[in-house]
Every structure is written in C-alpha cells, then in structure tokens.
Amino acid sequence: MNELIFEVGLAIALIAIAGLISQKLRFSVIPFYIIVGMAVGPHALDFGFFDLKFIHSTPFIEFMGRIGIIFLLFYLGLEFSVGRLMKSGRSIVIGGTIYIMINFTMGFLFGWLSGFPLAETLIIAGVTTSSSTAIVAKVLVDLKRTANRETEMILGIIMFEDVFLAVYISILSGLVLSGSTSFGGIALSALTAFAFMIIMLIIGRKAAPLLNKLFNIRSTELFILVVFGFLFLVAGFSETIHVAEAIGALLAGLVLAETSHMKRIEQLILPFRDFFGAIFFFSFGLTINPLELGGAVWLSLIAVVITLIGNFTAGMLAGKVVGLTPKASSNIGLTIMARGEFSIIIANIAKAGALMAIIQPFSALYVLILAILGPLLTKESKYVYMMLDKVFKFEQRKRVKEQKLIVQENSEV
Image 1 (spheres, rainbow, N blue to C red):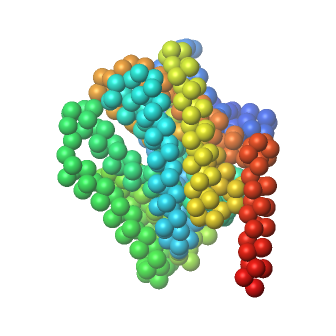
Image 2 (image 1 turned 180 degrees about the vertical axis):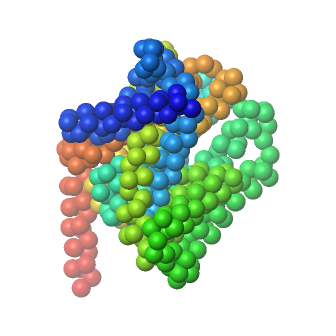
Image 3 (image 1 turned 90 degrees about the vertical axis):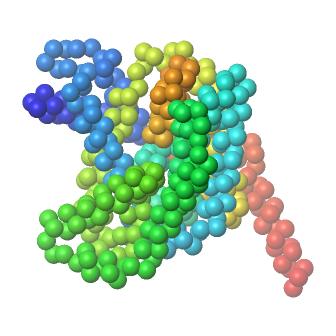
C-alpha cells in the first residue's frame, strides 16, 4: 500500500512538472502529459527509491484515467444541452455518415494497398477512423469553443461514431477472435446502443422539472454524492450495453444541462475534470513503449498524412451540408483529428487475436503523433485555415456564391 501511494504521488508530481513546462512554453498541455507518461513506465530506468516503472500503481493510474474521461465528457455535456443537440439531429446523421465513410474507406484502402491481410486491414481501418473523445473534449473546453456553432456537429459526429464503433468492434471481435460473428447479436448491440442514446436524450428533454426537484439539495456534500452517483451509474450502465462509458458520461451531462442546477454542478466538477483528465493523458502515455516504435515509422507517417487529408475533407463536406461557413467547417475536421483511446482498444483486438506484430507499434506511433498534432492544429486552426485558403480559395468561392444568391434574389424581385 505504501508503494502504491508513493508511486501515485510521484506520477502526480511528474504530471504537474509537465504542466508547468507547457505553461512556460505556452504550448498545449496534452502532448506534455502524454510524453511524460511515455518517458516512464515498464521500460524506464530504476533509480532505486524513485521507481519510475510504476509497477504497483499502473492499474490504479489507468482506473483514475478512465474516471478522467468520464469527467471530461460529463463537463462537455454540461456546456451543451439536449435541446441544441436534438435540433441538429438530421445534420448529425448526415455529417457522421460523411465522416465515417471517408475515413474508414481511406483507412481500409491504405491497409489493403500496404499489402496487409484482410483481418489486419480491418484493424487498421478501425484504428484510423476512431477519433479520441477525451482529447476532443479537452480541446473544446480549454479553447472555450463549446458555444461555437460547429461544436454541435463535432459532438454529433462523436456520438454517431460511437454507435458505429459499437457495431464495428462487435464484428471485428467476432472475425478476429472467434473467426465468426452473429448478425443477430451485432444488430441487437447496435439497436441497444442507439435506443439508450435516444432514451437519455428524451429524458433530458422531458424530465427537467423532476430532475430540478431531485437535485434541489442544500448540502454541498450530499449534492456532490447525488451528482456523482447519477454520473457513474449512467456511465457504468452504458458500458454494460456496449456503449462507451465516455458517451454515457456525455449523455449524463446533456441531461443535467437542462436543469436549473447546471451552473452549480459545473463549478463543482471543474477541479475533478482537470485533475483526473491530466491523469488520463499520462496513463495513455504509459501504454506506449518508445523502444518498440522504430519499425513502424514510415507506415505510421503515411497513415497520419492520409488521416489529415481525410479528416479535413470530411469536416469541410459535413459543414457544407449543414450550411456552416468554410472556416467553421475546417474547425470540425481539425478538432476531431486526434486519435486515442478507441484506436488503442481496436489495436488490442489485433494483439488478442495474434495478428501481425507490427500492428501494435504502428497503432501506438500513429495515435501518439495525432494525439500531439490534433490539439496543436485545433489551437492554430485560424492560421491553418488561412494557409489552406491561399491554395483552395475557400473565401473567394464563398463570396462568389453569396453574389450569385444576391443576383438571383434581385432577379426574382
């Protein structure tokens, strides 16, 4: 027990140092948390009393990281609302479909053209399609973009993607781990996930008066217990029906955002979000062994370039369909660029199924690059858009379109 507490304390100290360095350099904090996690772990040197291998504490740190995802997505849900999300229902389905089709197709073609067998190709397609819910949530909150119009589409794509992943992981597990899969089981899993999301959205829309009474508690201690109980029950239940716990937490936040207690909940949740969120990114870094990444460098770099192109294209098309400006549309593609926890989950299926050994280092390096690059591109999205506009003339096309509409309206008059 003493070793566990000391190792957790050491981990928190390293995270704090990484945060201070990032603040000093005025850089996104997420890459620093991940890199410091990579620098330690099972492959690290042993300095006697300061054991940086984190042998005793790794499972506990991973658990705290999972809590971090829950708080990040819960807070993001609080910043939004069920009402805003439901108004964009049709747009979300269209945008999510565009995103999945482009990224999955490009990932599948990349794996196939690289000469991988079918099972490995399907793994690669899944890894390159799955954006990181935790990183996206952290970036949106840190950059104060939760009120932006394109955030509706970003959240919608995340939720749509989770339904897709619930189905895809079921199929992939059947193919890779058992060699077969049940169509009925897959269909039931997908319908259950979709039904759960719809029910939670309806509750958020219709049960606000009841929830206002339920959470009308003066005692701060009891209020926190009730809120946390609701959050973890919803997140835990969602996991049991094969919906990611992160999406369950997002839905819990969306529901409570409709209540009159939203601001009070938000203030109480902030320190938990920041603390456990930082531990998540550190624990993610712990899973990556830099000594095993060398053989997959070129494969990972090519996949990153393909993802940059596919994601940006998907964001521009999804935004155009729902009438967003080119700049807002570019924010969609750049914000959901990061890859993380879901990609690692899919890569672990390959490991469990004894597929080609290169899949693990490829996935780790690919995820690491985009986990660092994604937040940076999002932060500097204004400058990225300005550079791309010089080549693709987005603003010029926008002005031409607006002029045509004016001429058309005048001719009708």
